[in-house]
Image 1 (spheres, rainbow, N blue to C red):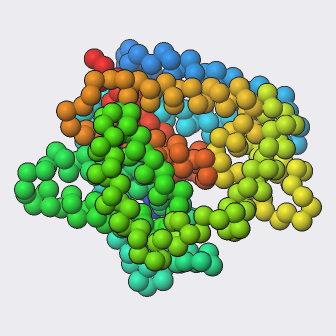
Image 2: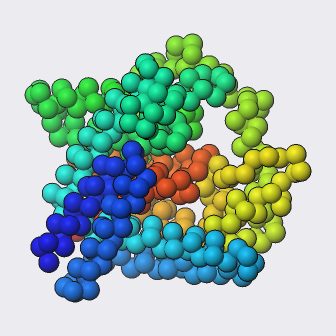
Image 3: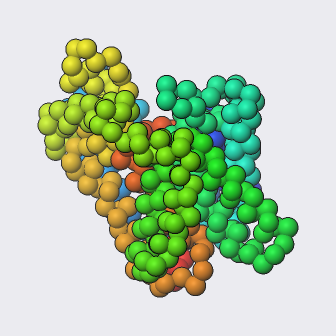
Amino acid sequence: MRFLRQLSHWSLWFAVGFLPFSKSGAEIGVAVLIASWLTGKILYPQKLIESLPFRMFYLLFLGAVLLSFISVTPQDFWTAVRGLVKWVKYLTLFFVCQDLFQDKKLTDRTIKVFAVSMLLLTINGFYQMLSGEDWIKHYSVDIPGRLIRMRSSLQSPNDLSTFYLLALPLAFSTWIEHRRWSISSASWVVILLLFFTALIMTLSRSAFFAFLFGVCFYFLFRLRKPIYLALFLIPALGFIIPGILRENFFESLRHTDQTIVERIEFWKISWKMILEHPWIGNGINLYVRKFASFAPLEETYRGYAHNAYLQIWCETGLFGLLFFILPLGFAIFRAIRTKKPDGFGYQEALLVGMVAYLAQAFFDTHFFAMQVTFLFWIFWGMFVSQLKNSER
């Protein structure tokens, strides 16, 4: 039992540590984590923590996924099966993490592992901006035609920015614990500045505004003191006064901007797909395959919808989308209804990060890009675990 518990802990840390750098490393860590946890539960049966609403919602979601197979043709069957297996893996990861993070020491150590991993990722990103490519995977800086953007060792600047949506509030929470003057406290201030600077250097508008939305949500609905919101926004807006940042985050928000035009076009095509099978969807994991059937002949793009919720609706239908959103809203509502916090702990940090993540998902490929998807389910499990602990 002790061996399996330690194996699950180390595989979790391995997955979190390698998550920004290696898809294979993260996959191996998650696979060993799930296998060791399941083996322990089978050999040494223990009562799981109460999670009835989440079990019910996610079972209904998987039911909607199975229902979407009605729209699957024989030649696409195994692609859909792979999609089903992928969602089972993600949801299992959530329940594993929800169970494991009842251990406060494990939670503390996992956040420290994540912070170290993010610090290395950030240093790698700064090196990339100076040299033209990162020193881990030799990815070049992203140059989309408007501005140079940091992406470090991840596939895109938007993926990198998503990691900071969770890293920033968690680092702030850790600093709050060490806010008395000390070397540790000063170190966390430096880490916070590095993380925020790196988030800005990704030039991800969706992540920047999602982060502001997450913070505003916390001030308005958790603290219920709008005055703190004003105190935050004044210095925050000061960061975007410089010309290059003002151009990227505000002046480029025009209907003629290339990325905005592309997303609107993808969403129009996605809506056509939704109208084809609005209730049961077009088949799990088949959005990319069926995209061309609904796109104009001149459209050459073959990829994601850049709106995670639209894509889930396209693939699993309205029932799938509903049962996916309900547990998210359920947990967030419970979080803002719990007793007002004395400080800014992990639960508050994860509330900010999760709200920001879910807001950015309206404009990006969350839940379909592997690394940011693993990121979500690991820390979503931690968030729900923190919520249950606070209600005891």
